Amino acid sequence: MTDKRTVLVTGGGGFLGGAIVRLLLSRGEKVRSLSRGLYPELARMGVEHISADLADLGALRQAFQGVEAVFHVAAKFGTWGHYDDYYQANTQATLNVLSACRACGVARLIYTSSPSVVFDGRDMRGVDESTPYPERFEGPYAQTKALAEQAVLQAARAGLPAIALRPHLIWGPGGLHLIERILSRARRLRIVGDGRNQVDTIYVDNAAWAHILAEDCLKRDPSLSGRTYFLSQDKPIPFAQMLNEILAAGGLPPVTRKVSPALARIAATLCEGTYKILGIEAEPPITRFQVNAMATDHWFDISAAKKDLGYAPLVSAEEGLACLSQWLGDYYSGSRS
Image (cartoon, rainbow, N blue to C red; front, side):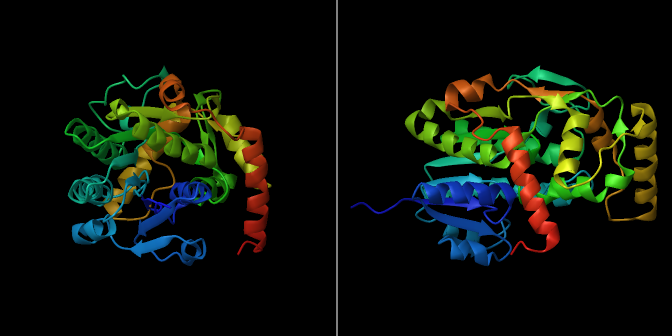
């Protein structure tokens, strides 16, 4: 009997990374996770967890020894903060991952990118992967993820088999970054504009499944290397509906109050200016990136992912919301271990 191959996930203790780890384990893969933190739950699942910083190239090269495929998921997300922090966590870390992949002979890399890399603050309606990078980025997260994605695609052209995936607004049980931001701000939330602007989302297990499909397909067809793919539920919904469905899953009333995009942008500009002048490190209550994201259409043509990867959502939005509601009930009641 041949030995199992080893697959590595950066950020395996995180939201999407954890979902990818669980899927890999369900397929009988030998999984190695690399994150800065300690995650005892990974060890309980039989995952080999390595605690290391992606800035440590030596540690990466050790961790990547004997690895057949890498899922590079770890990243710094946010709408506020210092550019250098985002650059180190997103761009430089990816450059280090690429270097380690080459040094260790990794056969395939699946990189988790973001639709933010092509967002310029304006409506995006059914755009596909031919959409160019903008001349001006909507914040350091988008810019540094775009630089990282470009580095991955350049590495693919140079011979490292790699695919970049762009899942949009990942949500589901365990996804407290997005969910808790919405729930914790429920009382002061406003719908920007009329709330009818259409947005794509993706349930976490569907995003994870797409990563597995991408690696499988790249293994069978190396000509897919160097491509990017948008991912979603393939069913855009009004932004206000998305917001209120998450609030309902958390047992909270819907948002009904509205503010015009122009007024919201003025408020965001004033907030950002005040925080910069006062040197406040925390994220302002509202930023221009958030306003643009809440006020515009942003949904994507995922025909390429369907055609090349055979992607289709496994979990419907309705099923996902039911799972999220149950998880939130357990989480906030303190019964989640």
